[in-house]
Each structure stands twice: as C-alpha cells, then as structure tokens.
Length: 68
Image (cartoon, rainbow, N blue to C red; front, side, top):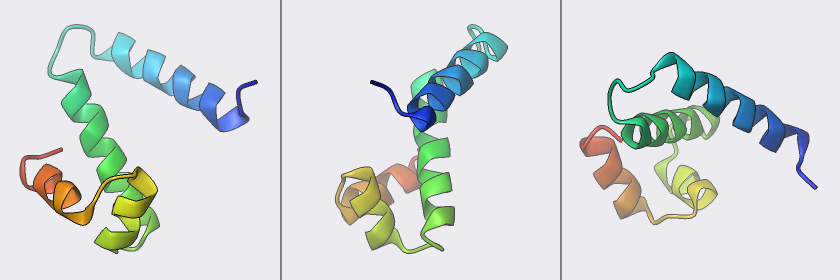
C-alpha cells in the first residue's frame, strides 16, 4: 500500500515530466531538487541531509558541485 506522500510524489513527477516533455535532463533535475529540498529541511546540515538521502556526505557534496 502506498502512503499519501508516495501518491503525491508520483503525481508531482508525472506533472513535471509532462511539463518538461523532452527538454533537459530529467534525472539531473530531480536529483538537484531532491538535494536542495533536503538541505532546506535540514537547515543546511549536510551530514543530516546525506543521512536522510541514504548517501555519504562526500557523495552529497560531489552532487552539489556538479549541480545535482
């Protein structure tokens, strides 16, 4: 069974894909948005953000440098 947030995320992703049909790198955009929003939620704490994303801090910093 899907949670309400999973259903909402799927709807948002569908809308994003339809809106940006064929333009840009979808994976890079989603990664960048995910990292940025997680950093906002953790008040810029990179270690906490990395833990929430299931990656190490070095990986998070690398992805931040390359724009997601």
